[in-house]
Length: 410
Image 1 (cartoon, rainbow, N blue to C red):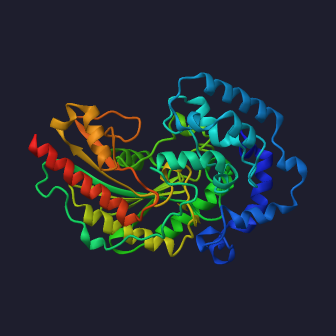
Image 2 (image 1 turned 90 degrees about the vertical axis):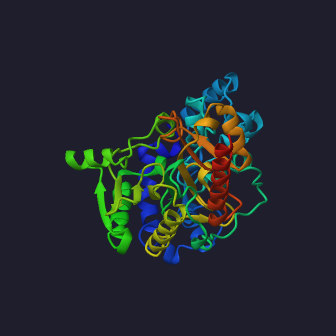
Image 3 (image 1 turned 180 degrees about the vertical axis):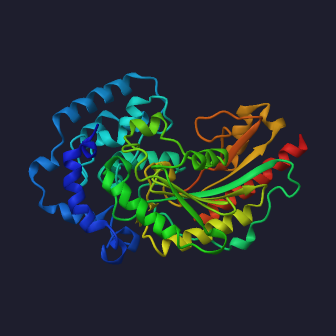
């Protein structure tokens, strides 16, 4: 597909990158989780001695890029990729590569193949946000409501977790509440550039880390590889099992070696869940039935703090926590409820408009690209950058409270 997807290039990366990035990357790597420079600095250093062919974009990749750009330009796509990938930007970036071998094609191929994408771009590795900044920065600014390239994401702050209560104490509207965040493990590229050996190595680290959790978070890790049918069925019944990526992720080359290196952890109460190597390296999820956001948020905060003690996360001084999709950057927090608002839902366009006033996003019951089942909508905070974790969750808390008030008044 693109540079980092080619096996021979990836093997070169792995030999060096595992030496630089595995295990104790956070201890002495000088990487961004410790406040260092932009992107995967510790990994970049390994590649200073690259020969010229490593820095040149393959002719076949360039040809595919040119064809994809022409196809997108001629389409009626409403994606942010089409909006900001001008000919000038395209020409400036098409010959660039990250030290992992990622090209512009690795970033944009999903948007090229899926003109109905809302955004249409992914970062194949942490460096891509810097190397291809001329494209990522305006998309980030547009999606994250004015987060300019001169802006800096605030330091992580989960705030006073005791301030949130139940958004729907009577249980009339909110079916369930969920707060999740994404994390990337420092020293590893993102999905398109990972080798099978790295996937397995990461899964082993995550499994070992999670098995050390105690109290309410104590549970079990289930690798997707070799999973027993009974276990698989139970996870499906619990709506915990994630599937191989959709066409957007497939086109982004994010599903290679499936299901190797993928796994699921959940606690005994089934209120805390971790997905390993789905879209991001880690998706950390806290959830329960009803509207007690306070309880859900406290559990997530506790889990993130415990995991971070053991696994260094990839962080950038300007962009916050780094993720595969630029829509999740910053806090990476998505706080959501499954909610029934039948009166407001009669005019879906108006529901979206009212939700938008409170920086909320409306999706179908199963999330992005899905329909509302039984009149139940998934409504979450939209802003993830330029504000703290606490502020992101408070926007959802305040916004849902207002939507419930409006629904009651109709």
